[in-house]
Amino acid sequence: MRIVLLAYLLCASPAALAQELDAAGDLDVGALEERRLKGLEQATGFIVDRTVTHFGGEFMRHFSQAFRGMPGTEEFDVTVFERPTARQGSLVWVEHNHRPIARAYLYAGRSSNIQPIAEATADYVAKRLADDVLAGALFEDPDLAKEGL
Image (cartoon, rainbow, N blue to C red; front, side, top):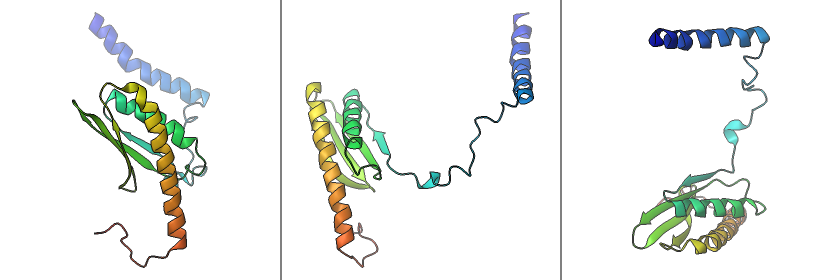
């Protein structure tokens, strides 16, 4: 009896709910309108979290708050990576366009040092990216593969 009742509830509920929403005209309320989102594929300013540990997540939280609080960082996409070890703590580095910008060490068992390290790293990364943009505007490089070896 319970199985029949459960099967009836699972089968009947979605169809009835969809008919009620369709009758009320609320079915497509949350649909995206592509006309309003023309620049969606060109969105920038992401901070990607590739950390693993709790300390790395805390670093990421403080780094992202400090980095987004600085002017001119809205257009940069950066990725924060972490390589944890049991004895020495974690190596955390920040990349922009698959190029390492900064590295920081989070020592094992010292969570009180994470916030100043993250804020100093965010300040360094913001300055370094601003310098790279300025150097790119001032100097013309005919090489098409600037990162090539």
